[in-house]
Image (cartoon, rainbow, N blue to C red; front, side, top):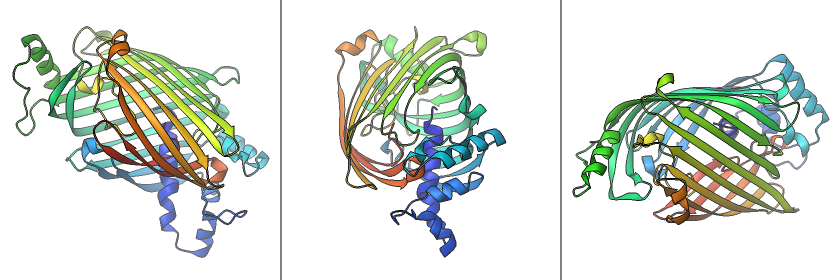
Length: 402
C-alpha cells in the first residue's frame, strides 16, 4: 500500500474533522497564527493520539459512487515521539513537512451505488525513528464490477461480475544505514469466489472455444492466490503527503506458488517511479512512470490482473497481464494557499510485456485545485476533474494523486 495508506487516512481526517469545531478555543486550532488562514497543523501536532471517525466519499463510476466511514487511531512509541517532537522544535513553519509521521491504524466500511460493500483494517508502523517500517492490512469485499476483457481481447459489451473476497497484505522494510534506500519483504493472499452470472449476463456468442472455456474458468470460480515477494524503495521526497520535490522509486517481485498455498502459479513484477521538480518559485512539475507485468501460462482471475490507474479512467476498466502508464502534472501556486493543476495521462494494456510496444494508447486529461490545508505537514487537499476515453470523472484528492 506504500505511503498512500498513511497519506490518505491522515488527509481525509484533516479535511473532514474540522466540521466538528464547536467552541472558540477548539476552533482556534484550525487557523494559522501567521497568515490567519484556515489551517489544521496545530490540531494535528497536538493530537498525535486518539480515535477519529472520517466520512469517505467515493466518486468512481466503476461502482456507481458510494459512501463509507473510516476510524483512524494515531499512536507512536516513546522513541518515535521524541524524534518527531525534536524535528518540530527544529523546524520553521515551512520546513515542518519533514516531520516523521506517527504510526497509524485504521478500520473502514464502505457501501456503493451498485450494492458493493467493503470492510477492513490496516496498520502502518514506524519504529527506530523511521528505520523500520511495516504496512499491512486485511479486508473483505462483496464487489460488483464490470469486466471488459483482458489485454488485446476487449469485449464489445462488458460482463457484470460479483466477487466475494477475503484478502490480506503485509510488507516490512528496513532502511540501509541511514540512506534513503529501503529493502524489504512482502506477503499477500486472496481467497475469492467469482460469479460469472449476475442479472443474466453471460459470455457473448461466437467466441472461439478455447477462449470461451478459459474465460468461463476465471469468471466463475473459487480460487486462492498466495504470494511472497521482495521489494526495494528509494525515497527522497520532501514529504509523503503532497511532495513538491524529490524522487520516489519502488520495485518489487512476487511469486505465487502452490507450495505457499496458491491455487495458481504465476509471478508479478512491478515498477513505480515518481519525480517531483520545483521549476521556479511558483511552478512545479511532476512525472510518474509505472509498469506491472504478470507472468502466467493460463488465464488469471480478474482481481489478479494488473489494471490502469489513471485519473479519468474507472477502476478495472482496462486490464491485461501487462500494463504501462505515465502521467505528467503541472502545478501553479496562485498564492501561498491555493494551487491550480493540469495533468495528462496515458496507459497501455497487453497480454505480455513485449506486446505493450504495439498496443493501443488510452489517454486522459484533466485539471484540479489544491488548498494548503496543513502547512506544517505539507498537506494539500482538493478536487480533480478528468476526461478519459469513455467518460468524465471527478475525484476528491487528499495529498498527491499518486
